[in-house]
Length: 118
Image (cartoon, rainbow, N blue to C red; front, side):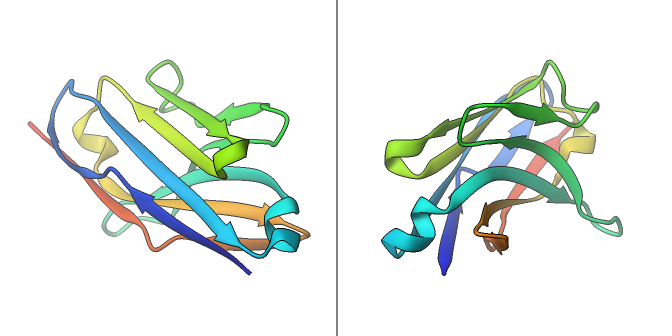
């Protein structure tokens, strides 16, 4: 199994920045099988949506709503994925979840709350 622990959420004002981190742990077999990692978010009353993903080779994908404001990055040696969020808006308020795809399986973290106040 791959376990994921997110950190870095909190309360920030409109226009501010936050950096989320997600560290993966598990057996050598499972960790070595991780390919794509990503961030999703779920706002109250809404479905969970993709925010950004990054492959082990560094290819990235972003939701249109965050392009130019959010940057996903990855430290493969530390099994950690980051989400730098700039120019935050109230509509970015949500619980942010990290996920990892490994050997055709998917693991999810427990989520971290991001609240953008106006």
